[in-house]
Image 1 (spheres, helix red, strand yellow):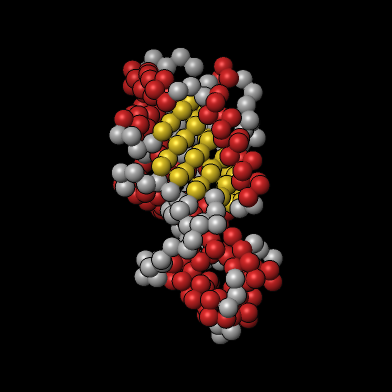
Image 2: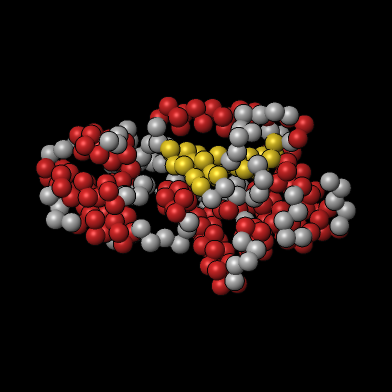
Length: 280
C-alpha cells in the first residue's frame, strides 16, 4: 500500500480526525492491520480513515476510543462530521471523490453530477422530487454544483467518463437545457479537462447493463468503487471487487466509440437541440 501522506489537520475536519487517528495509533504501537482486526475492517480501511478518504462511522469511533484510550475524542468528532449536504447514501462517496486523483465513471441515463450545468441539475432534482419546495431544490442544486470545483484544477483529478447513448437522447429539462448541458460537456472535452466516450446503442449488450459505476483512485490509499442505485449506494474497497469493476470499465471503454468521435456526437446532439431538429 502507498506510504502515508503528510496530513494538514487544518485542511478539513476529516483530515484532523485522520491525523489524530494516525498519531494515537502510532503512539500505542499498533499497525493499521492490528487496529483493523477488532473493528472487523482491513488495514487498508484504517489507512483510508487516516488519509481522510473514508468517513468514520460512530460505532467504529466508539471502538477506536476504547482501543486507543481517546476519552471519547473520536465519537465527539465523528458525530459532528456526520452532518452532510449530501444524501446519506452518497455522502461518503462525495467526500472520497474530493480526494481522488482519478475518477472513472459509467453513466447509463444522465450526465454525471460532476459534469452537470445548473439548469440540467435543477431539472434532474425536480424530476426526483416533483413536490419539493424551491428552497429544497436550491440546496440540492448548490451542493451538486459545489462538487464541480474539483474541475477548477487544470489536471487533477483526471476525469474519464463513459456515457450511454441514451444520455444524449433523453431530453432532460427541454431542448434549451439539453443544448447547454451538452455544449458544456463538449467544452470540458475541448479544454482537455475530461475524457468522454459514448457507448452507442449499436454496441448491444455490454458489461455494465446492471447500472452506473464510479471508480476512484488515490495517491495515498487503495482505490474505491461506488455503485449507485435508486436512493441507495455502495462504496466498496475490497481489492478483488474493485479490480473486477475495473475490468468492467475497461470492457465499456473497448465497446465505446473513440473520444474524438464521441465529441463529434455530443456536439451534433447539442446542435440538434439548439435547432429543434433532434430525431430520436
